[in-house]
Length: 296
Image 1 (cartoon, rainbow, N blue to C red):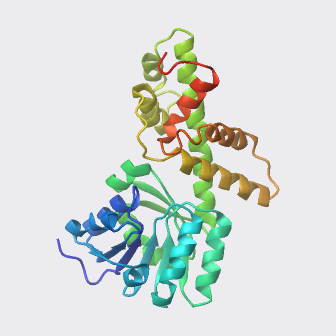
Image 2: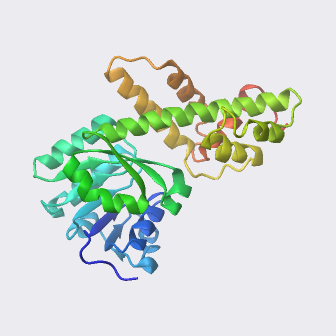
Image 3: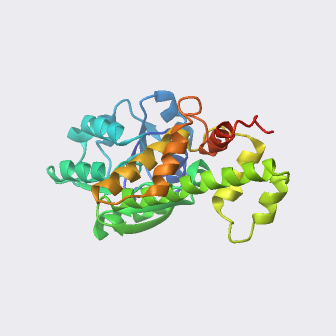
């Protein structure tokens, strides 16, 4: 499938758990894409789908109309962006689809603005499964004009929504992660209670499906808890980072978020043993707190 030369050329910086399937969706929509990753083998997996693999961030971005970052955190984005910055075209649009702090997004926008380069923050929700299916929820912060420029490439990856000016995308993602983290914790507690009280947790989850307790978390992560399969999609460490960033954002506006704080502390108890486990491993923390044997 050949790329459409009329579409903007894309540089993808970061091809890990999320970046690689996002890159495949972009390529499937006939965009020219150049990929870079700190570990070259992770970028090379996109070659068979039509990507060009760069040897440095600067090489990746030099011909790009849109530069997309999908990295671990704000510090990583800042460090790699500084390496790439001299090679980014002034007419390019830089989009950070990583999960960072709102303040970090605003700082990146200011740094790029000094060079006349546009910026959007557009973190996503939906996990690896959503990235593979092209059904990610994309929360974009930026101008109307930049959103229109990015709309087609966003549509290749999922459902984009412009939620406000730069920084608003990260704020929306933090709101998302507060809901996800809190729901993960309460689903884990409910399944532990069901089992400890003598009910069948499998049957209890089935009974809850379709009622007011129904959620994507109960559907996907509830099943992972029952199956005790904790291979990472979204990691415990990433969920905790997002919750801590949400609390940081709250503190900067003078807010107190008691449930988010409690949820963050529960995830913190999973470190370091389960740091890279799937976030549904919150179940293990609840079991440990109650001195329950695994699966008993």
